[in-house]
Amino acid sequence: MGRVKFLPSLFSMTDEQAMWRVQTQDDHRAFVRLLERWEEPIGRLCARMTGDLHRGEDLKQETFALVFEKRTSFQPNARFSTWLWRIALNLCYDELRRINRRGESPLDADENATVPGQRELAAETPAPDVQMAEREEGELVRRALLQLPEIYRGVLVLRHYENLKLREIAEILEIPEGTVNSRLAEGLAQLTQFRPTGPPTRRNALEVLRPVRIFRPLPHGGGSR
Image (cartoon, rainbow, N blue to C red):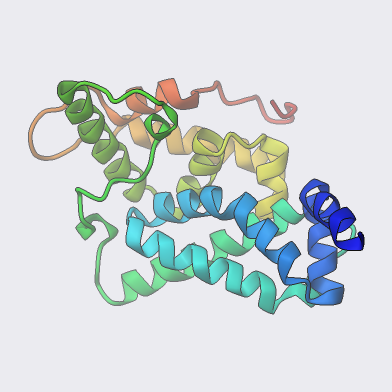
């Protein structure tokens, strides 16, 4: 009977409650629950930051391994999502520095292995010409993002693709909201200057980002959206 009561409580508990069980009891069921909730957004973040699905998958796995390894350092009064995003981002930054030291470029990643987009959520299959246009635009954005410095790329990915509020991004990066807003504005400005090489595309990188979630940067001191 206790087991029957346990299962609903496991599925209904908050992230923080689940992490508390992981932290205090090494509860693997609670850890699996966190993994199921968060593996997709963390995978997207890592793939967007590195421009490589395969590398993003490795970093996602490394993120959750590190969460379990550092479980005792999680603060009970902290928000689990903030802690998790921060761990994943730091691993991405470390990987990008390793890539730079080796003289590699994220742009060398397989262009056919595009980062998942919102189309994945649609049930219908788009027409072949629409699929081709989406692949072109996805590659355009991938290349544009990878040419941005890390500090701008991170805030753009968190804001546009993960739909986080300025306040949430500030907490993750441990910087003021005004700094987040400035980085967003500068990142968008740099995207408008991106000029793709190769065959001409229908739209520039900023126009492709616009339907995803474009926004007007707030004045310094403005509140979160």
